[in-house]
Image (cartoon, rainbow, N blue to C red; front, side, top):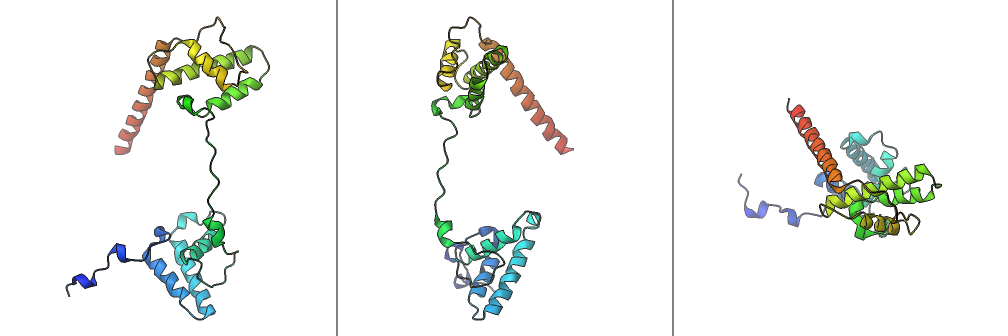
Length: 214
């Protein structure tokens, strides 16, 4: 029998799925369980639904608290209307509505994002070391890394003093080698090393793709 336009159920007219991964049929089963007058029947249906939900995610069976997560999701999808006994403490609707605390920006100096988020950690570590050859070597390693990062994102050349000023600022004045006579690695050499690294990564990815074809 052919369908008329009255028989068609459009997605825009269907009930909103709270957790779409489980599909519309699970949501209908939950709605059916909510409507049952007998709590024994609601409990029986809730356990059956949990079993089906678990079978849909077999890769999570070994994850700790997997069953707890399923029961939480069941009550969430019921909009907390399902009155059924759970082996775990039921989730609170009020807690779920709370907004998470804003995450701190990982970089204290966002204007120097091209150095990467780990550079501040490296600089702080170097600042805590005792003076000596090891600390000096680490500082110049960091400075050369900063120079290479700067060149990757900005221009083909940069004066060493620019990098050393940034290092001084990022270390809160604890590392000051602006008057050093030692030079950082030449820009052209750093760029050559960068191109060699990029070519290696490109060839590695290309070879991996070729291996997967055969």
